[in-house]
Image 1 (cartoon, rainbow, N blue to C red):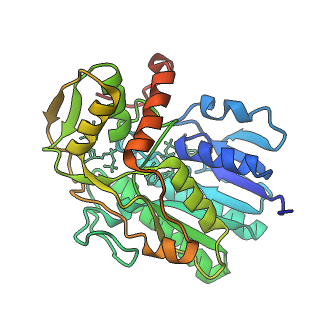
Image 2 (image 1 turned 30 degrees about the vertical axis):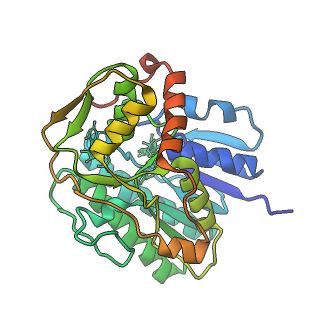
Length: 324
Ligand code: NAD
Ligand code: UDP
């Protein structure tokens, strides 16, 4: 029988965090979900609230908190550009002070700690696809910097705590991930296109639609994250977790239109500042060390995500930031 662990998931009520909580609760662990509900709502974890091995704490990670845990997954941070640019100073605080507080807790408890980092640490990459050894091309003073530099600083803190205090860390660089429980008004491309298609509204492409992204389905991502946490104590990362299948944003729009059977038409809006032109993970390290690779193709994952979006009432979701 496997050991029951006390596991903290910060940002646990969010899109990815709630899927992770689902998996950990199913595995029988004692799960604490901590979230300030800035970009999420309790409906994501409603089904877990009655479970004996699950509890929810409403708390902001920029403030210290004392808990006794064996493992920490640090996912608390607004992730969609519209969300993290809403209050950029708070975003930087969440990444940096959140990391310091969680690393401090890990140090006190001797807990293992995993950071949800991002492909945004590569900025607008000049190396393609991106290996972990690539140091990136981030504009430190642009509108995405609060997120990109905040996440880069968090990685620095993880490795400094590892060197200074021998903390058992993991750093995962997540590439664009989508699936059920994305906030329908988060402004990200998959949620925007599906919502617009289902409501027969215009599909908004920013720029000419030739920019690329590589989309990973949430279940694949969570599997990779859990494997990394439980992987060898010699492999701390950073490790890319994402799906190398690369698509232009125009291709994505066309696939969403086809799968939804929508009457929406595609419209072109001005490009957003510092928008990365291409992005694709090199996942050789994840394959080698974690024996992990994605299994869900884009059309299959989109079909499941569309089914979820059809099942929700858009009016019951708050739109915390201006949206299209
Ligand atoms: P999300 O917005 O659904 O989840 C983030 C969660 O963190 C939300 O529940 C939010 O309320 C919470 N949160 C934000 N600030 C907080 C604070 N100060 N204190 C406590 N909780 C706070 O987004 P997501 O896509 O699930 O992202 C989860 C993590 O994965 C984030 O750290 C994000 O940077 C990272 N990530 C996600 C993607 C992706 O494509 N989904 C890509 C790269 C990295
Ligand atoms: N995008 C778009 N229309 C939208 C939302 C996003 O064309 O309604 C584009 C955006 O400019 C970017 C890509 O889709 O090139 C991915 O954007 P998203 O916000 O999902 O994530 P990012 O990878 O940029 O953080």
